[in-house]
Length: 419
Image 1 (cartoon, rainbow, N blue to C red):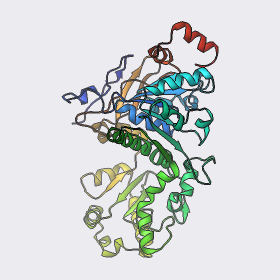
Image 2: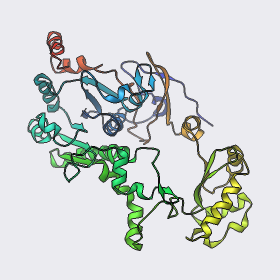
Image 3: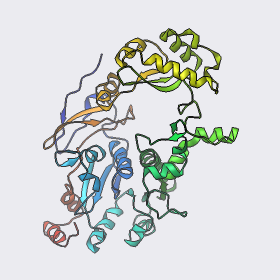
């Protein structure tokens, strides 16, 4: 039975939006509860990393410039006054505005570091050193500090100081060289280097360093290169290249449009179906459900000119019906044939709902919206959505008052542009 979800309005002292799904768990706090993260990063890689940590219970303080904050806040389209990107990426965090170029701002940050577990930043190499807030300086204040720097090309090498974006990182690490078909490379729909090579790898590395700290008693510096991180995603083609010596290219292999059994096919109504019948049992099931027993030949999984012929035949086959009709025909067949859904359909998909990957929330200003759910499901320490993405500087007074700053001092700091 499909589970229905009601929109949850999170109060200031918010409870988990996924509370009803974690009833009976032995711990009510996330696995990272009690860890404090100072996040200086902006845009996508760093905020995605700190979102993952915050979802698991970490107290993430988003340190932002008093004037502009994280630039992604202002990117259209917006939900209320905030960018939809910001709303998704910065849930469960507190926002502190701090001018790190002002002496008073540096002093506040150093005080926060003394009690922090993690500093996360995404500036070019050398920026934090110029501010006097680099790892070597901060570890003197807190030897147990884990410091993670996410950059495009890493902290060393000939490209270390060069600007770049996801497309450049994937171009230089080979991923784009064989992504595509008919010999033409293509862009990926998601930012693989930013998210996978950067944010996800950084979150894993931070948690690993925190575990190592419990054994060694000291923190350490983590150098995350988005180019390096996504380079490791070449593992399958890297291994094949080592074995056969053939440089990969678009459409040359069974996983990138080279084989008919693993491909995308257009339907009569202009939609598409995905076919991933790699193994013999799945290919057999597909051929049987399709009513095309003549396709069930051993050479279906061998390279050669016959693959193009088979692709053309299957393409013509899928053109005969609409996507909805194919969904109905293949729904009971275990042959790895599924429709390509758009995001609106994904949000309403029974599988997405069953996995609680859509959480319906209500904000007092923005109104109702659908937030991404939490992917890893922990049996004892589940993640939770406790608060909406913060307004710029929403928690500045709260955080500084915890450092014993008075109301009068806060007023002075604001007048100086330090917060």
